[in-house]
Image (cartoon, rainbow, N blue to C red; front, side):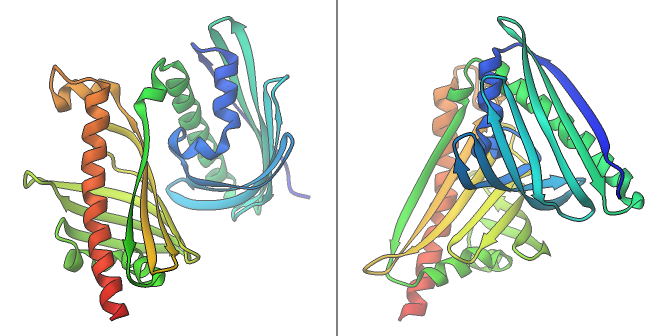
Length: 310
């Protein structure tokens, strides 16, 4: 029988235990909180028990697995156990333990137990658990201690009706390697697919002022009508950028929707936007910039789909 190994990581946070627990419990919001988490879907939920599927980076690789979680709001604990692990992990589980120290100080312990498919993979797993745990605890501390974190988080979407097929809209966004020839604001693209349904997209985009910005994203493609992504290389004004493309048939054609969730970096607002700028200005600036690019992509996807329909 494989040996079970253990890891414990801890941090102290200047925030209430209830606030910390809520951030840990809300797994659907993890992509906007934890750097390693790309996407989460809640598959089942019954009372305090839930089954989730999660995609996350581990040592630079994108892994996905299915887990069972049990929430215990009274004890301020969340227990988790991978139902289906991914190589080289044979089994993994653990517990988030949240303990109030004083009224405004909370201790967080993240416990893991795991087994490897073979001893040769132990080093890889130890490194991944240590790296991700430290990143998650640091991000949790930052989010919990930010008194105005809700103001710094912005979610919005834009939609366009199309007289064409949803599958053609999906193909346009999925086939990003063609974007330099199809989109005026995209100068360069490198698209790789390290695993089925997982893409790494690096591209250079042109800003209205003529400058070039390099971005990198992980994209997850769902041929049923969605492409979700998390941006890795971020501009100075953002600490998180996740998004989703949705494609749906309608009675008269189809619809394409671009959804964004971003978290602003409050320390970057003045250096980027000037001494008079505040959070409201930054929210408007980011929404305008992202909506502009999304609208351009959607218009060209619309043209592509409608040409195919004709």
